[in-house]
Image (cartoon, rainbow, N blue to C red; front, side):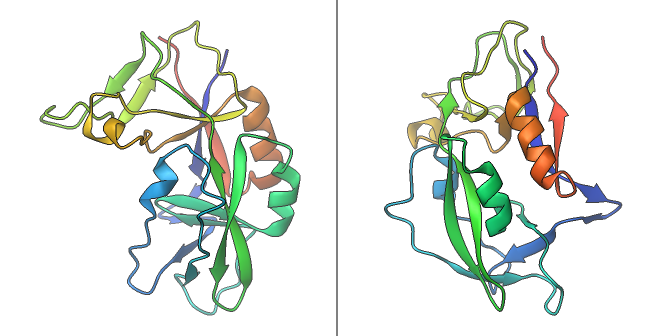
Length: 186
């Protein structure tokens, strides 16, 4: 079965989605790397567009997350593995982080990259999934190995993944801003 990584659409050196961030341009909520529900503990952060005066796009981009408009949220709301966490964009109201709560262990036979030098066991990138890997959710994350520092904190690999159904849904509602790249099979 095909597996896709969700990535921002780039147009040359820029991205088609507008960039959102905090005042210091360092917004990163590490909890978004943990595939567990955050909806009950979430406090809406106040963020802004990186280039003030620009109109927001339906999808906003940050190196650590995507944020989507209410319309995109509504069209993706049928996926149980997504929860939508509000962020307030200064002057533009609420957008929503589509936080993926479905996850699985790294499938045996996956080809992965680790940091250089490989001292801690964390995974930086999944280069290929085994040919027999079949994700059980339309959107999912891959957990860091349990014996790695990030794994002991319950964190996942930074990349966000989708099966064919999830990839098709994302492209149909946000394809101008989020693209899907098929991950090779080993």
